[in-house]
Image (cartoon, rainbow, N blue to C red; front, top):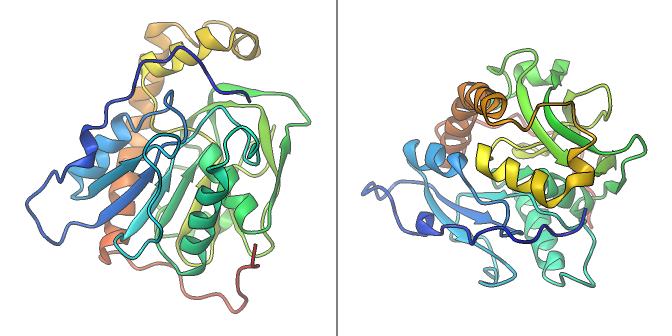
Amino acid sequence: MRPRKGFPRASRHFRVRILDDVNAPRLLVIQPDESDPLGPLGEWLTAAGAELDVRRPFADGLPAGLDDYEGLICLGGGMNAEEDDNHPWLKDVRNLLARAAHTNLPTLGICLGAQLLAVATGGVVAPGEKGPEVGPYLVSKKDAAWTDPLFADLPLMPDVLHFHVDEIRRLPASAVLLASAPKYLNQAFRLGRCAYGIQFHIETTVEVVQAWAADEPELAATARPGVFETEALAQVHQDIADTWQPFATRFVRLAAGELQPVEPAPNTLPLA
């Protein structure tokens, strides 16, 4: 997918410490695209006690390492996961994601972020063979999700929002599949003990999705009729909030050490 244009500059007010609690886990949030800000996900994370350091790598640069953070989140974007010619900083993002996965730093990749995490650890991302996946959908939990600290309490078929043309064609060798859908199998996965990728959005707002649809009319046309109407999107986002705000709270607890990750796997992640 190409970068979306014409989107208003994203707010960066999440870069300040929200709470006075000195034990609040500090999360690095990478925003690869101006058009995909943290949105309500930022509010859920800070309400759960996290301090967020939001970096736009195309403008702000990235930290050299992850020692100052208890967790990492990478958001979505209109570029491809290996479009380094146009976005040379993508390599640095992939390196940070690989380092986080290998060092068991709680990590969450969202849409493009999930694709970057997959590529960084030995997976394959390619244009979707079945065409774009766009609009509100349900994904289905796999057996492994029922014992996962983040996914166990999700409903069997949680609501999500898709807007992508690439797919995670092949997961890294040691990845555990946590959720699937009929069109594309690899919807959510875990690497190691606590690095997660989700091939969908949970951070959007009605306005953000409508801006994407206006900027990418050919992609929007592949969705079901009426899904981008304000009332329909408002209901979808309420359903997403009901399901995924508790998930965001659990991620903060994982980063804070209050929620235990899965037990170590006998094999290790492939080096990228």
